[in-house]
Amino acid sequence: MTSWNSWLKGLVLPGAALAIAIAVLPVASAQEEKPKSRKERAAEAAAESAAPQADYSKEFRKLAAPVQAAVNEKRWADVLAALPELEAIPTPTLDDQKAIATWRLQATQGVGDLDAFAAAIESFLAKGYAEPENVGAMHRQLAAHYSAKKDTAKTLENFQKFVDATPDVEADEYETLGRLYLQANQFPEACQSLGKAIDLARTRDAKPKEMWFQLRDRCFIEMKDDASRLANLEELVGEYPDKEYYGRIVALYQAQSKDDRIVMLNAYRVAANDPAGGLATVGAYLNYADTALVAGSPGEAQRGLERGMKDGVVPNAGTNQQLVTQAKAAVAADKKTLPGEFAAAAKNPKGEVDVKVGLGFFSTGDYAQAVEAIRRGIAKGGVTRLDDANLLLGAALVELGKKDEARAAFEAAKAAAPAGSHLGRIAELWLARIARVDTAPAAG
Image (cartoon, rainbow, N blue to C red):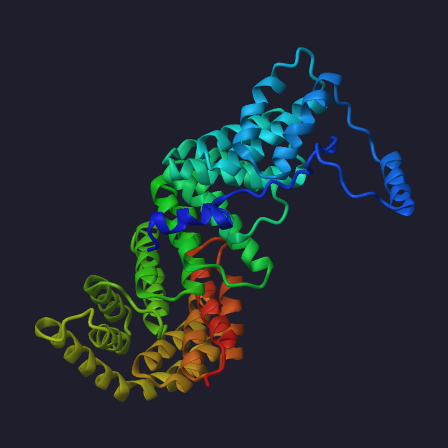
């Protein structure tokens, strides 16, 4: 995970200083310029008549010319030395005050006095002198200043104001805001900001960063919001398949469904079937094997354990090897009986029988026969769990490389599942996997 120090550097603007985009005030210069042509003088007169005239007091005009000259020559110490006299003018106009504040900004930045510069920015903003297009940049500069001083509260306050004042905020800037809220233990706000980063990236046809989902996961853990955490993890594994993410999802399904066998068999299956996924712990693979054996799918138990061994998660020794051996023996026995069961199921009016035979064929790895049996059962009717049957059908079609037909089966499973149910969510995981494969860049 990226360190806090590295992303905090992103608060600092290029050059670590704010380029004040404020016009130098149009007061008389102490130095005479070269004579202008009649045409130039006419153009300047027309421009001045069209522009609003600044309202400077007589006292200010009297003192301002040498200060403006010092500004033009970047003699910042002289500018700072002259400001107290200007600030002592008894009844300054608003334009007088804005001019003085502008010069203080420029001078404190020029001499490199960061604390004074920050104070000048804050005063400038508080008095409403900043043009709208400068407000966001000034707050971002303050956020960088307070970040360097390790003042978390003021860093967050100013970065939020930067985001609020900036119409074209980038997704990475929402990430920074989310991290600042995380640092301040303001988890709902952190989740909201990270969600905006994800949504913005998608609106721009960009892939959201894996880190954004990871940070949201941390937020939802802190908030004890398992429902939102699960939805975030499902999005995450759809974009970035990984056994750790699948493991967290499976654990949440297990807790929420109270270890429902149908839910868990489907959950383990989608995780272990994903070449980029898998399960994260020995316990999860052993639970998969146990669930599959009880459900009458010893081939899944065998394949799951072998996948875990191949990935280095399940030790290839002792009782684990015994389980594989037992599963292989059960698969061999099923291969002998399944043809007769398939023929008998054809005569049974209940489609549920065909689906169970289809699970047997799926277990033995005869995916074409599995598809035939399951489809026959669904067509007959009388299937207890159409969502479960269609998930099994889709999984068999995935094994056969028939993505379009698999997609249709998973859509049917989602339609048959109650709204928000775990099997409907598992259908979405399969659909995300298919979509991910479809959009993967070509090799070469």
